[in-house]
Amino acid sequence: MGIIRGGLVFFVGVLLLILLIVGNILLSVSLSLNYENVNSELVSIFQNFKLYWYYSLFASLILIALMFLLIEKKKNIFINVGILIIISSLPLLALNWIVSSFNFADILFLKANIIFWIVFVLGIILVTVGIGLKFWKFDREVEENSKEDEEEEEKVVKEKVKVKKK
Image (cartoon, rainbow, N blue to C red; front, side):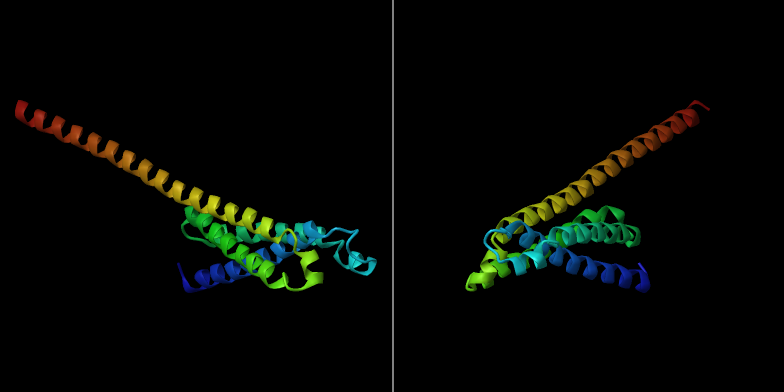
C-alpha cells in the first residue's frame, strides 16, 4: 500500500471514529430524552438529535464504503470497522460515569450504558465475522491448493507410467 493510499485510509479511519463517537452520543441523548422531564427550551434544542444521528449513520456508511475501496486487502474491512466501533463505544462508558455527578446531564445520558453495550457487541460481532472470513478463506485456499497438488501428482504419475511403457 502506497503512502498516499495508506494516509487516506488513516484519515478516513479517524473521520469514521470521530463520526461514530458523535453518532453514539447523539443516539444516547435522543433515546434518553424524556420530554416530560426537560423544560421546553431544551426540548427545542434536542428534538432533532435523532435526525442528526441518522445523518451520522449515513455518513458513517459512506466512509466505510470509501475505506473498503481504499483498503488493499478487502477482507480486513470487517475487522477494521469492528475495532473502530468498539473504540467508539468506550467514550459512552466514560461519559456515563462522568455525568452521573451532574443532575441535568444525567437526564441526557440515561441510555448511555445500553447504547454502549449494543455498540460494543456489534463491534465484537464484526471482528468475529472478519476473523471467521479469514479462516474460511484460508481453509478454501488450502482445499484448492491440495486439489491442485493432487492433480499435479496424478500428472506426474501418468507421465512416469508413459515413460516406463516406452
